[in-house]
Image (cartoon, rainbow, N blue to C red; front, top):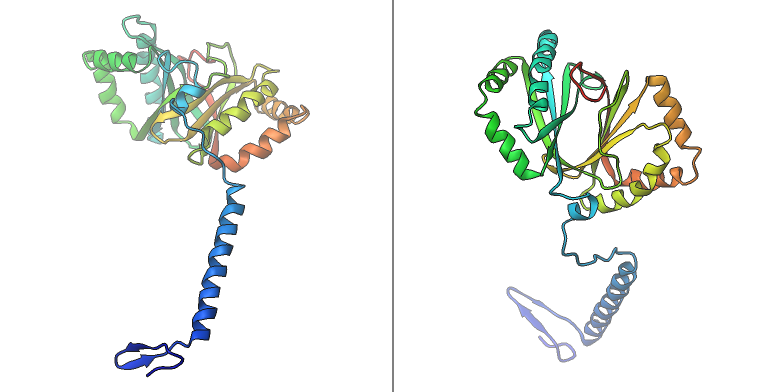
Length: 282
Protein backbone atom coordinates (compact mmCIF):
# COMPACT_ATOMS: atom_id res chain seq x y z
CA UNK A 1 0.00 0.00 0.00
CA UNK A 2 1.34 3.41 -0.98
CA UNK A 3 0.19 6.75 0.42
CA UNK A 4 1.97 9.83 -0.91
CA UNK A 5 4.78 7.62 -2.08
CA UNK A 6 5.80 6.20 1.37
CA UNK A 7 4.86 3.03 3.16
CA UNK A 8 6.48 0.65 5.58
CA UNK A 9 5.42 -2.97 5.59
CA UNK A 10 5.22 -4.72 8.91
CA UNK A 11 3.80 -8.24 9.03
CA UNK A 12 1.01 -8.98 9.60
CA UNK A 13 -0.06 -5.34 9.41
CA UNK A 14 1.00 -2.43 7.28
CA UNK A 15 2.20 0.67 9.18
CA UNK A 16 1.91 3.80 7.05
CA UNK A 17 3.72 7.13 7.46
CA UNK A 18 2.71 10.04 5.27
CA UNK A 19 5.26 12.60 4.18
CA UNK A 20 3.73 15.34 6.34
CA UNK A 21 4.02 13.11 9.40
CA UNK A 22 7.65 12.35 8.56
CA UNK A 23 8.27 16.06 8.17
CA UNK A 24 6.80 16.90 11.55
CA UNK A 25 8.49 13.89 13.18
CA UNK A 26 11.83 15.06 11.78
CA UNK A 27 11.22 18.61 13.00
CA UNK A 28 10.34 17.24 16.44
CA UNK A 29 13.59 15.30 16.64
CA UNK A 30 15.56 18.32 15.48
CA UNK A 31 13.91 20.61 18.04
CA UNK A 32 14.40 18.00 20.79
CA UNK A 33 18.10 17.61 19.98
CA UNK A 34 18.50 21.40 19.92
CA UNK A 35 16.87 21.71 23.35
CA UNK A 36 19.06 18.92 24.72
CA UNK A 37 22.17 20.70 23.49
CA UNK A 38 20.98 23.95 25.07
CA UNK A 39 20.20 22.16 28.36
CA UNK A 40 23.59 20.47 28.32
CA UNK A 41 25.37 23.78 27.69
CA UNK A 42 23.32 25.52 30.39
CA UNK A 43 24.00 22.81 32.96
CA UNK A 44 27.70 22.85 32.15
CA UNK A 45 27.85 26.36 33.57
CA UNK A 46 27.13 24.93 37.02
CA UNK A 47 29.19 21.74 36.91
CA UNK A 48 32.34 21.95 39.02
CA UNK A 49 35.41 21.62 36.83
CA UNK A 50 37.91 19.05 38.06
CA UNK A 51 41.48 20.30 38.04
CA UNK A 52 43.99 17.62 37.06
CA UNK A 53 46.23 16.75 40.02
CA UNK A 54 49.36 14.72 40.34
CA UNK A 55 49.18 14.41 44.15
CA UNK A 56 46.77 12.51 46.36
CA UNK A 57 44.42 14.60 48.47
CA UNK A 58 46.24 13.46 51.61
CA UNK A 59 49.41 15.19 50.38
CA UNK A 60 47.52 18.47 50.10
CA UNK A 61 45.93 18.26 53.56
CA UNK A 62 48.58 16.89 55.88
CA UNK A 63 51.91 18.23 57.09
CA UNK A 64 53.94 15.31 55.84
CA UNK A 65 52.50 11.86 55.27
CA UNK A 66 55.80 10.27 56.22
CA UNK A 67 56.07 12.06 59.58
CA UNK A 68 53.10 11.15 61.79
CA UNK A 69 50.54 8.41 61.39
CA UNK A 70 47.79 7.97 63.98
CA UNK A 71 45.72 4.97 64.97
CA UNK A 72 42.43 5.36 66.79
CA UNK A 73 40.85 2.33 68.45
CA UNK A 74 37.26 1.92 69.63
CA UNK A 75 36.71 -0.93 72.09
CA UNK A 76 33.20 -1.83 73.20
CA UNK A 77 33.62 -3.51 76.57
CA UNK A 78 31.32 -5.91 78.38
CA UNK A 79 29.66 -3.74 81.06
CA UNK A 80 30.67 -6.07 83.89
CA UNK A 81 34.32 -5.99 82.71
CA UNK A 82 34.89 -2.24 82.34
CA UNK A 83 36.80 -1.74 85.61
CA UNK A 84 39.02 -4.77 84.97
CA UNK A 85 39.59 -3.61 81.38
CA UNK A 86 40.66 -0.14 82.53
CA UNK A 87 43.07 -1.59 85.06
CA UNK A 88 44.56 -3.92 82.44
CA UNK A 89 45.11 -0.99 80.05
CA UNK A 90 46.65 1.17 82.77
CA UNK A 91 49.13 -1.59 83.59
CA UNK A 92 50.14 -2.32 79.98
CA UNK A 93 49.82 0.71 77.69
CA UNK A 94 52.22 3.07 79.53
CA UNK A 95 55.02 0.50 79.31
CA UNK A 96 54.79 0.59 75.50
CA UNK A 97 54.50 4.38 75.47
CA UNK A 98 57.62 4.83 77.64
CA UNK A 99 59.78 2.22 75.89
CA UNK A 100 61.93 3.85 73.18
CA UNK A 101 62.26 0.44 71.57
CA UNK A 102 58.82 1.09 70.06
CA UNK A 103 58.58 4.12 67.74
CA UNK A 104 55.09 5.02 68.95
CA UNK A 105 53.43 7.20 71.58
CA UNK A 106 50.16 6.94 73.41
CA UNK A 107 48.37 10.22 72.60
CA UNK A 108 45.39 9.59 74.83
CA UNK A 109 43.16 6.91 76.29
CA UNK A 110 39.61 7.52 77.46
CA UNK A 111 36.28 6.06 78.53
CA UNK A 112 33.20 7.40 76.78
CA UNK A 113 31.01 9.32 79.22
CA UNK A 114 28.25 10.45 76.85
CA UNK A 115 27.79 8.64 73.57
CA UNK A 116 28.34 4.90 73.22
CA UNK A 117 28.42 3.48 76.73
CA UNK A 118 31.00 1.04 78.13
CA UNK A 119 33.44 2.09 75.44
CA UNK A 120 37.17 2.81 75.51
CA UNK A 121 38.95 4.99 72.96
CA UNK A 122 42.73 4.88 72.45
CA UNK A 123 44.85 7.01 70.13
CA UNK A 124 48.45 6.21 69.16
CA UNK A 125 50.97 8.22 67.16
CA UNK A 126 53.63 6.58 64.96
CA UNK A 127 56.47 8.93 64.14
CA UNK A 128 57.79 7.85 60.77
CA UNK A 129 54.46 6.85 59.25
CA UNK A 130 53.70 3.37 57.93
CA UNK A 131 57.24 1.98 58.43
CA UNK A 132 57.01 2.85 62.14
CA UNK A 133 53.59 1.18 62.40
CA UNK A 134 54.91 -1.96 60.74
CA UNK A 135 57.93 -2.01 63.04
CA UNK A 136 55.81 -1.63 66.18
CA UNK A 137 53.36 -4.36 65.17
CA UNK A 138 56.22 -6.73 64.38
CA UNK A 139 57.94 -6.10 67.71
CA UNK A 140 54.75 -6.37 69.75
CA UNK A 141 54.09 -9.82 68.32
CA UNK A 142 57.36 -10.88 69.98
CA UNK A 143 56.38 -9.28 73.31
CA UNK A 144 54.99 -12.03 75.54
CA UNK A 145 53.49 -9.59 78.04
CA UNK A 146 51.66 -7.72 75.30
CA UNK A 147 50.34 -10.93 73.77
CA UNK A 148 49.07 -11.96 77.19
CA UNK A 149 47.42 -8.54 77.52
CA UNK A 150 45.69 -9.04 74.16
CA UNK A 151 44.44 -12.46 75.22
CA UNK A 152 43.00 -11.13 78.49
CA UNK A 153 41.58 -8.08 76.75
CA UNK A 154 39.79 -10.24 74.18
CA UNK A 155 37.77 -11.91 76.93
CA UNK A 156 36.40 -8.52 78.01
CA UNK A 157 35.36 -7.08 74.64
CA UNK A 158 32.12 -7.19 72.72
CA UNK A 159 33.61 -5.65 69.58
CA UNK A 160 36.44 -3.44 68.42
CA UNK A 161 37.40 -1.40 65.36
CA UNK A 162 40.18 0.96 64.38
CA UNK A 163 41.20 3.53 61.79
CA UNK A 164 44.51 4.86 60.51
CA UNK A 165 44.55 8.66 60.38
CA UNK A 166 46.64 11.57 59.19
CA UNK A 167 46.59 14.98 60.85
CA UNK A 168 45.43 18.15 59.13
CA UNK A 169 48.30 20.55 58.52
CA UNK A 170 46.43 23.51 60.06
CA UNK A 171 45.61 21.79 63.40
CA UNK A 172 47.76 21.53 66.49
CA UNK A 173 49.78 18.39 67.07
CA UNK A 174 48.32 16.77 70.19
CA UNK A 175 50.63 17.23 73.19
CA UNK A 176 50.18 16.09 76.81
CA UNK A 177 47.84 18.25 78.94
CA UNK A 178 47.34 18.61 82.63
CA UNK A 179 43.85 18.03 83.92
CA UNK A 180 41.22 17.73 84.87
CA UNK A 181 39.56 18.04 81.47
CA UNK A 182 36.79 16.39 79.57
CA UNK A 183 37.34 15.65 75.89
CA UNK A 184 34.93 15.77 73.00
CA UNK A 185 35.56 13.66 69.90
CA UNK A 186 33.40 14.95 67.06
CA UNK A 187 33.36 12.57 64.08
CA UNK A 188 32.11 13.54 60.64
CA UNK A 189 31.38 11.19 57.76
CA UNK A 190 31.83 13.39 54.69
CA UNK A 191 30.40 12.93 51.22
CA UNK A 192 33.05 11.37 48.94
CA UNK A 193 35.04 13.98 47.08
CA UNK A 194 34.56 16.80 49.62
CA UNK A 195 37.65 16.41 51.82
CA UNK A 196 39.61 19.20 50.11
CA UNK A 197 36.64 21.53 50.42
CA UNK A 198 36.31 20.68 54.11
CA UNK A 199 39.99 21.36 54.64
CA UNK A 200 39.80 24.72 52.90
CA UNK A 201 37.01 25.93 55.18
CA UNK A 202 38.47 24.54 58.40
CA UNK A 203 41.93 25.98 57.69
CA UNK A 204 40.22 29.33 58.28
CA UNK A 205 37.73 28.15 60.91
CA UNK A 206 40.32 26.77 63.34
CA UNK A 207 41.38 30.34 64.10
CA UNK A 208 37.97 30.95 65.65
CA UNK A 209 38.39 27.98 68.03
CA UNK A 210 41.81 28.61 69.59
CA UNK A 211 40.93 31.28 72.14
CA UNK A 212 40.51 28.89 75.09
CA UNK A 213 43.11 26.37 73.89
CA UNK A 214 40.28 23.92 73.33
CA UNK A 215 41.61 22.55 70.00
CA UNK A 216 43.60 19.35 70.60
CA UNK A 217 43.88 17.75 67.16
CA UNK A 218 42.22 17.26 63.79
CA UNK A 219 42.52 14.08 61.73
CA UNK A 220 41.19 12.41 58.58
CA UNK A 221 41.05 8.71 57.78
CA UNK A 222 43.34 6.82 55.45
CA UNK A 223 42.30 3.24 56.26
CA UNK A 224 39.01 2.17 57.81
CA UNK A 225 35.90 4.26 57.23
CA UNK A 226 36.99 6.61 54.45
CA UNK A 227 36.15 10.31 54.21
CA UNK A 228 35.94 10.34 58.00
CA UNK A 229 37.12 13.38 59.95
CA UNK A 230 37.77 13.51 63.72
CA UNK A 231 38.09 16.75 65.69
CA UNK A 232 39.33 16.42 69.28
CA UNK A 233 38.54 19.20 71.79
CA UNK A 234 39.32 19.71 75.49
CA UNK A 235 37.17 21.58 78.02
CA UNK A 236 37.23 22.00 81.78
CA UNK A 237 33.65 20.76 82.04
CA UNK A 238 30.35 20.68 80.15
CA UNK A 239 29.54 24.27 81.13
CA UNK A 240 32.86 25.47 79.69
CA UNK A 241 32.13 23.50 76.52
CA UNK A 242 28.79 25.24 76.07
CA UNK A 243 30.24 28.69 76.74
CA UNK A 244 33.17 28.15 74.36
CA UNK A 245 31.00 26.86 71.54
CA UNK A 246 28.53 29.73 71.95
CA UNK A 247 31.38 32.25 71.90
CA UNK A 248 32.48 31.01 68.47
CA UNK A 249 29.28 32.45 66.98
CA UNK A 250 30.40 35.93 68.01
CA UNK A 251 33.33 35.79 65.59
CA UNK A 252 32.62 37.13 62.13
CA UNK A 253 33.00 34.33 59.60
CA UNK A 254 32.14 31.37 61.87
CA UNK A 255 28.53 31.31 60.67
CA UNK A 256 29.74 31.19 57.07
CA UNK A 257 32.00 28.21 57.79
CA UNK A 258 29.11 26.31 59.38
CA UNK A 259 26.79 27.22 56.50
CA UNK A 260 29.14 25.86 53.85
CA UNK A 261 30.47 22.77 55.67
CA UNK A 262 27.18 21.30 56.91
CA UNK A 263 26.13 20.22 53.36
CA UNK A 264 29.39 18.26 53.07
CA UNK A 265 28.41 15.95 55.95
CA UNK A 266 26.56 12.66 55.55
CA UNK A 267 26.61 11.74 59.24
CA UNK A 268 28.12 13.08 62.45
CA UNK A 269 28.31 12.16 66.10
CA UNK A 270 29.86 13.38 69.33
CA UNK A 271 31.46 11.57 72.25
CA UNK A 272 32.23 13.16 75.61
CA UNK A 273 35.17 11.24 77.08
CA UNK A 274 36.93 11.03 80.45
CA UNK A 275 40.70 10.32 80.44
CA UNK A 276 41.98 7.14 82.02
CA UNK A 277 44.70 7.52 84.64
CA UNK A 278 47.40 6.52 82.15
CA UNK A 279 46.39 9.05 79.49
CA UNK A 280 48.97 11.74 78.57
CA UNK A 281 45.95 13.96 77.80
CA UNK A 282 44.40 14.61 81.20
